[in-house]
Amino acid sequence: MTAIAVVTTVGDRKEARRMAHALVEAGLVACAQIEKIDSVYAWKGAIEHGKEYRVLFKTTDARYDAVERAIRDMHSYELPAIYALTVDRISAPYAAWIEGSTS
Image (cartoon, rainbow, N blue to C red):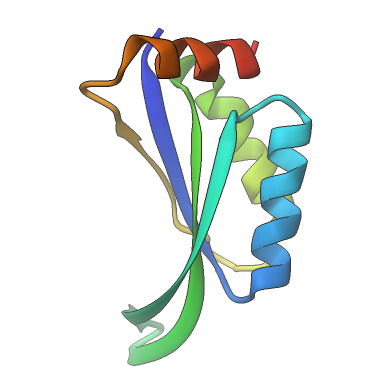
């Protein structure tokens, strides 16, 4: 089992919470963390600045495709950022909890 953190950003807290609850409830992720961020990005020829919420989902590499589909299905953005970071080192009991929560 390889633990991963899947990350996306959304425009408001309500969408972030809805997405987090749905993925945890479906057993696709063990946990979701939500934080408010400021984003600066290029979009359609302009530099944009906005308040967003980053959602970090803790899951396994085996669940990535299903997690990505679920995020995409619920996301309000035209082009949502969805990417995963591999967790190189993790405590064994915590890894076991992630795996048990997502199987």
